[in-house]
Length: 233
Image (cartoon, rainbow, N blue to C red; front, side):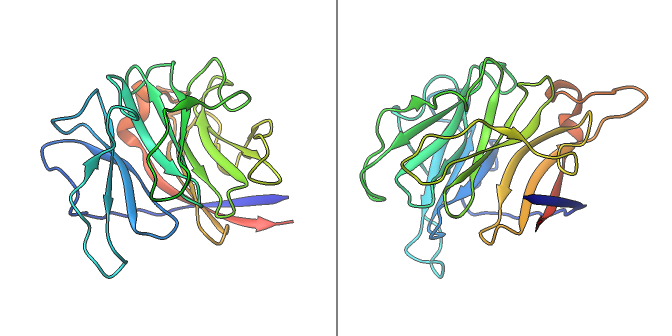
């Protein structure tokens, strides 16, 4: 059983793939560190936000110009949080009508190898998606735990689903403990470190007097970055 101890960590970084005239967000690195996936509202896309990727030959080389992943992945909707599995053969992301709409679901595309073309995306099957919003997927380094945000119980919180091997279907998601999902908070964008010792996430805490429960419309302007240390029991 894993427990969490939470503390604040504020981190800022500038990247050469940024477009100063647009919003660039929800970045994820491939496991080898040589492909950077992210979402952007820059001009020339297909919808409200599109998924892009920048590559480099090695960690000692600079990033290439970011390239749109094309109309197979991107639609006229809002695509965000592109997250490759550790072996690079599947790409999970969320798609919704708009940034804060309740129809957000987690989708996935596959390819035969890390250099191949992505397939036509499909919705991730239940129990990952529900009749409420699911978004911002992330994986443990072994690919056997998927973390994601959902408001399936009425608040935006981080959930986790596990499987025993990569060929198995995902199990029933479980909501992470109160050390991560503080009561009344909005908690999203989880990311587990490669050594599985630190869970990073975004969180907005409620104003107990004026806003007892956070929502994207009321609290997103006060989101901070947090890290929870993972302990084994």
